[in-house]
Length: 496
Image (cartoon, rainbow, N blue to C red; front, side, top):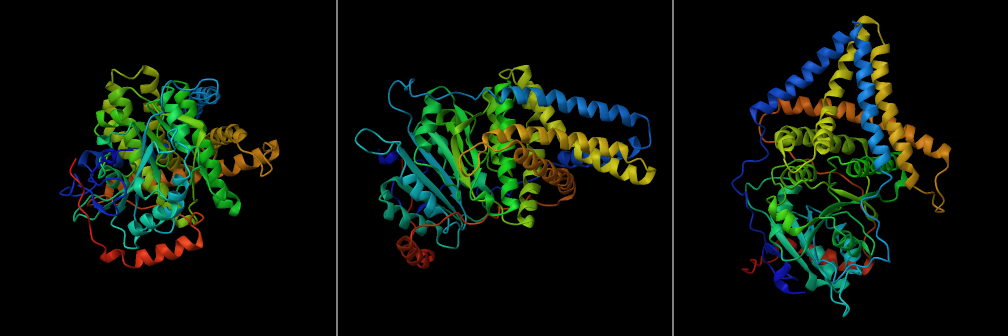
């Protein structure tokens, strides 16, 4: 693998490179006044409409329309999810060598989890006949204070892949906060490798992860995302619910893609052709949800929607506590609202997208108006003693989520490998449906925060439990390296 294939300077094996940050002068993730006004209008207007409707016969019509929209959206997903993007069979080997891959990871204070991911990447079978790797790894050390960069290189040396790994240190004053900005600082769109694969710092992947991704790309998918799985989901009820919710989300996105909708990336497991990423300007920087923004820019500018692959699995640790989960969902909700406000005009006007995809995007975004309506309906029910109206709205919402979860859990298995029994699928579907209440609260909270916040938006890093760590010998070396990381010399990137 040539050393100059790694973007943003620093040949493979560089311990510390200083990434050239494109937005050092950027003040942060700002909120246009128009967005504040729209968010306030949706929140106040939705609550008012729900409150008034609870005292009027129009409530019956609202419930009927709400239920009809859910059914119309549900059927294509249930049908489409049974048609995977592509089936990779051994009878259809690709013509010529598989694409080369740049693995891109951003992390802040991830010294405890990144060595495990480095070990997983060292075991990848995506290699040439002579055993040389068809991939390189770039880690963006985003202002870490725990010796993340040193820990990465110590793990890379221990695994024998130091020549494949580059660590870019990002510590510019005034740099935009967030995962998207950190990833973008490496300029992956300028890579000479064929494909960019983004993983979270706490991800775990199997040895065929990169070769499977390369086969999907070679088979014709320019953009796809991995099936997100939860590590040790059985450790707690909260972890299992997150795992089942991810399975449900994958079912929705697969169904959207297969039915011609505007399917989306998820941050852990992004796979995209490098030339396509370059054509849309790279990874978004000032974003709370870079995966959603990247998906929408890709659809609007290139007419490409994101394929989902069952065979491609990226594992991640669950959020361990409700407080961290709430902060995560609040950020995700605000990011979804911001994405919708920023990109709706370009998506709806896109000549590259068929009507079905544009309608799907509009319908998916319109869901953001449901939580204020339900909140107002609950208030109206208390005021006018009419619990039937909010009950019907909430019941329709929970039923749709439960049906999707039940259908999606056909992919899950028991520890023995046997499919889940119908009673277990039903019980877990009910839990996922009830858990979805968090979105009704989080969207209202995000609308309020978007309408009232002053100053730049804050990127809240997701709090997770640690993935299984490296071997004891590696831990000793990592600890030693991390202790001197703060004083390690910084090597400037090599010019390209």
